[in-house]
Length: 216
Image (spheres, helix red, strand yellow):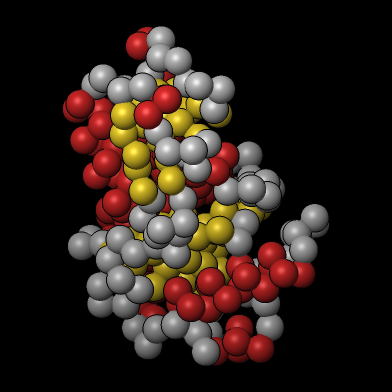
């Protein structure tokens, strides 16, 4: 799993209409983490036609040219704002399932998924940073039907137990289920299939999880 790698790279464009250059710089940096192309303009009419979701500031009163708009003021963080814009951009995303898949190796990494869509992947220099990101993500998506944290297989079980303890304390308030994988998950589903999720959607989710966790 490459640092700040995303399967959405080159697939999703989000518009940003604002005069606030500091906000634009912060969102541009964040969009690289998510692997999303952020198209910034000072007016919506100048945006490409294939950009149908715009991030804007309500306080600026910009004309959004009839496109769907996400206002920064409506969210507690820019991460949450950008994730909402991504959800609107990806058709069929019902937030039935929020999943964080963790590779607990020497350089731990995590993938953040909604249903069968991979939002982003990231490597971490410390477990505290990882646990905090997991906590924030699951809190942002408390309205998802199910919430899971999936830990990949590793020979260092003491590290897994330590990570599990930290995760249990962090996600207890959102009712997330923690699942530890081993090789047996290659022949069966890692997670249960949600009601309303098609077979193709479920297969895509399983493939993403197995790829992230290094399961063959």
